[in-house]
Image 1 (cartoon, rainbow, N blue to C red):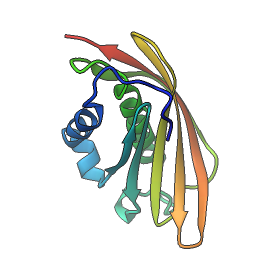
Image 2 (cartoon, rainbow, N blue to C red; image 1 turned 30 degrees about the vertical axis):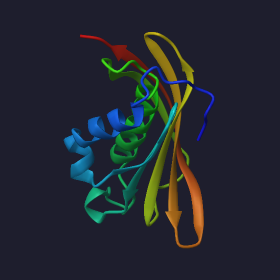
Image 3 (cartoon, rainbow, N blue to C red; image 1 turned 90 degrees about the vertical axis):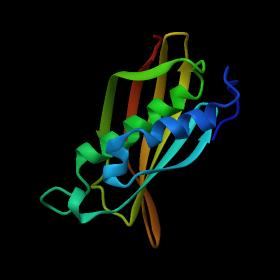
Length: 146
């Protein structure tokens, strides 16, 4: 995690966790917030067979959903208390099949602007004896007021 950013809202971690709890999709897939720091968020997702595609790999859409949220919440940590966050663009590269006991999605802010924040994300598959980066994301998030 990085500590080079200075959030305008000292209660950013509580705000991120409260917002995360409102995301029904995260509850549906069983994702939880693992850590929150200025400009960085980690989300954990245990493997579930009901979230897989036909070959038994965690579905690409699920992988994308989790890392998009990690990037969005990383950006959200640096936004004013009364702001909301919205994904406006992202690109994801899948590096390996999503196979593991659990997955960690890490979102980090690369550049925080007043309206637009650029983030990077990665998804790591964890198994008993290995960790493997399976996906990389670059995302643009927008600060929304009102």
